[in-house]
Image (cartoon, rainbow, N blue to C red; front, side, top):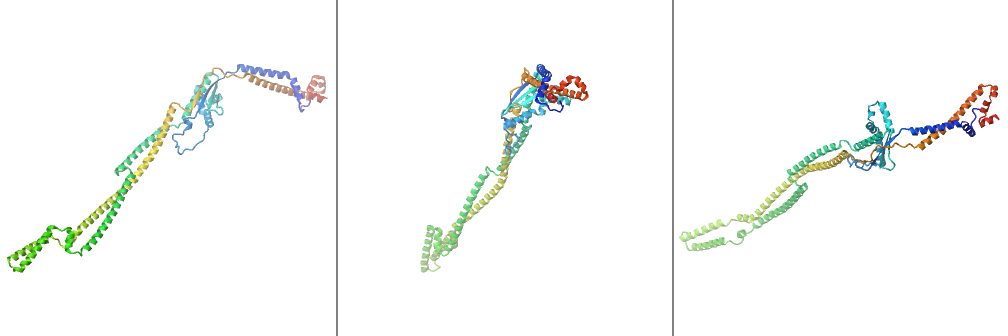
Length: 478
């Protein structure tokens, strides 16, 4: 048969049949080797720990140093949070710390040996989380139960500590406490300045004081207008009165001055009239040098002098009549001047109040601003204090629901599956050996046919038999 001829399915059957003992030997050898490997395989122990992730302080709140008014909402799902924790568990620094804790000897080796040890330690770990679950499984394999337990326990412990530290900013409580104390001092100083500014102006309330001043100013302005009207009326009355009494006779003026008749002055006037009448009679009877006439004239002169002293003149009477209205007018003028001075004082006080209001408003604005800042920082300080307390007591949103335990039994090796795999390998190896054997025999025969003579082929019936060992060879021969 030619070496370039394609083999048919019957050729393969014939090859397997021809080399069946070799193929069978390979299959049996593979099964025996697999069985021996299963029996003598090194024991592997696995320690397991499980963590439960719940909604807690770390993922439900913001950093205390973040301004919540300016914070941007970030949609973090539970799946992404679990993924972040899985990546945290797989990060190199954490795994190196766990390796150093579980295998102290790995810290004192060369970098190459340490890298190999780290890769081996990493392959022994299994960090997974079931889908749609809040459980994280940490598995660690080892040649001994102690080695597996140390690896799982070290990784769990270090992750809990590292997660608590990563979820809380370092030094935030001290920083916020200092800022809160500083704001408290500034607030107390601002409140003192505001109190002093109010005390300087005797102010309990700017608005209350302003309302009181404006009310007093309005009352004074109204009263000044009333007094001004009364004063104008009084001045008009004075002018009218003077022009009216100028044309009145003196007796009527005297009567207007005194009001009702004065009995004493009337009696004196009657006496003077009688004396004058008697003196006229004496003048008719006697000479001016007569003693009676002289005595009578003396009495008349004396009574006239007395009446002249008691009875005022016209100008005095006019002044007396206008005196009451003049005094009323002077009182109105004085009252108006006093009211205007009070109004000026109140307006000056209002101007001072306006200046004080600017200072007080600035102080009040500063106090309100500092109060808002102080309350905000006090709340943040309390949040940071709670963070520190949780960190101190090792409280977080990750709980160990299954701590790492010392494994007693090694991991069971699936014997049937492994034997089946070795059997499949044996079958594949047997088929491959049969094909390789057939191919080798073909090459040997081709080599012999090219170098041997025709007589030797006839003298060697075995070679001729090998040439027709397959169905394809028989067909070629025919």
